[in-house]
Length: 143
Image (cartoon, rainbow, N blue to C red; front, side, top):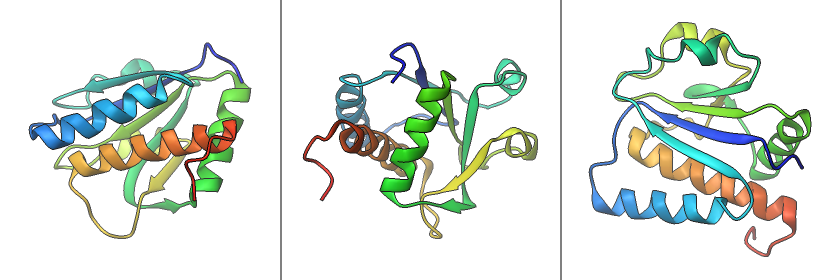
């Protein structure tokens, strides 16, 4: 897989509680063993023009999106890596994600049909990214 590919997680809110920050830090550290990852907190997602104009792969997280298994998500990550494109994942804040971002997204992904606070969604997608790389590298994490 292309080691120059980046994963950029764009978050429309900040992690205020220490337990969320600890979990995010731990999963980010684990992911860095396999990939270049950046986590950017943005008070609003309006500064995404460069991303919206790029051909990088964009996943918007939304409760009405497509659900995937962890294995399907791992295969998607592999496909994106093999394409050489950077992978952007966008988590909206309390007001969700703008329609123009959803229209640009290559995939609208749902973590569940349930609604979660954006802080928890961040931890969940970081865990799934780590799980994907564990699966792809044959590391005994996924049960």
